[in-house]
Image (cartoon, rainbow, N blue to C red):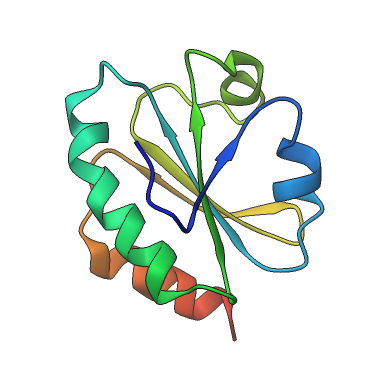
Length: 110
């Protein structure tokens, strides 16, 4: 359920791929059974294509990586968290329009 530029994050690679990343990382917390999560997937694919080489875009399946969801207090999905320098910069809960993500990503790149 991810485009070619969308990374899959899990317990094994979250620290190295997200927290230790030198570029901002947009992480979509989702699950296969979540309808709004499936509706958000094309937006995440678009963002991954638009920001290739500048921002890492990826997904965490909350059913498979529950400890990461608990660590970042994900209580509803979809939740999308923008990380920069290993820190949470912005959290989006629920289905959001693409322009909201673009504004946050552009600000994180400044």
